[in-house]
Length: 153
Ligand SMILES: NC(=O)c1ccc[n+]([C@@H]2O[C@H](COP(=O)([O-])OP(=O)(O)OC[C@H]3O[C@@H](n4cnc5c(N)ncnc54)[C@H](OP(=O)(O)O)[C@@H]3O)[C@@H](O)[C@H]2O)c1
Image (spheres, rainbow, N blue to C red):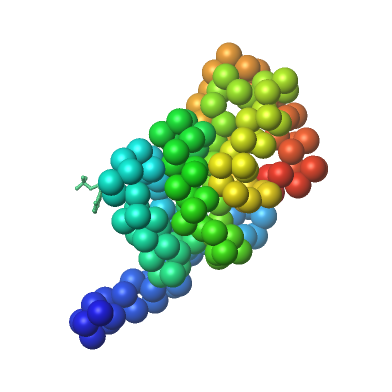
């Protein structure tokens, strides 16, 4: 890597470190994270996508956002590969489909998120969008997952 490139990366790293957002529970995160929609869908660029995510982590883009919907699970599988051995450096966000967000399915959906991601917990679990399941029911399911440790928030 050229000195010029190294300087550019240092500048990005410093900038990420100095611009943070604080969550309601006090957790502090760099304002810029990494989205993964459409990632993991094309085997020809898979290795590059993994490297890009890993470089992002090294630069301090701690938050990675994925979802069971993205690539029908392929995005989560790709993220799982990218964060192998670096789980503690990442704030991992995933999402549940509205049609999996009822009490009868959310635990299984989350178990599948975790399996694809190769981790035992998510830092943040989101309902991808509102569907027919009452929100109170989804919240009850998520609170249960929080108590059991599969999700932190
Ligand atoms: N919570 C939710 O329900 C939800 C909804 C939507 C998205 N998201 C998350 O947010 C992320 C971003 O979504 P978005 O809707 O903002 O996406 P978007 O509008 O498609 O924006 C993607 C950005 O990345 C740039 N980009 C794409 N490929 C690039 C490359 N190879 N090199 C450099 N820049 C590149 C694009 O640049 P150009 O404009 O120049 O192409 C664009 O600015 C998603 O990946 C997902 O994780 C979450």
